[in-house]
Length: 103
Image (cartoon, rainbow, N blue to C red; front, side):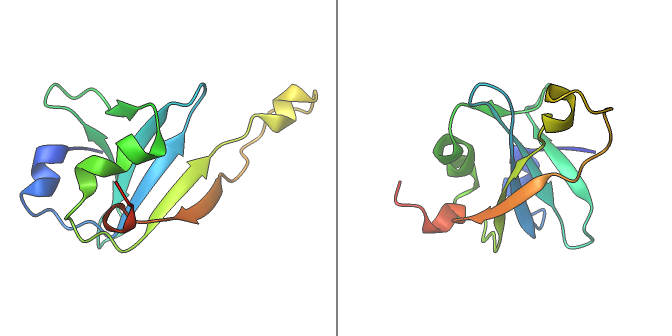
């Protein structure tokens, strides 16, 4: 499901911020709300927001009281070594929340 940054800033509750690490230092942003529903954060035209650094990806979420932030990476390792592609759980690492960054 999609949600805009404006909707989040207007009070949509955010339980968790998830920065999806993509190729070439590209980050997409997802949130989980209090019902554990996952949303992709988009602009007003419905295009997913993308950033070139973790810090830039977290800046718009300062002041929203986010309690947990994760960096998520889906590895194509199986494909790279010739193993049949299969669904592999994404690696998730806890990182500093937007309000805790020194930016």
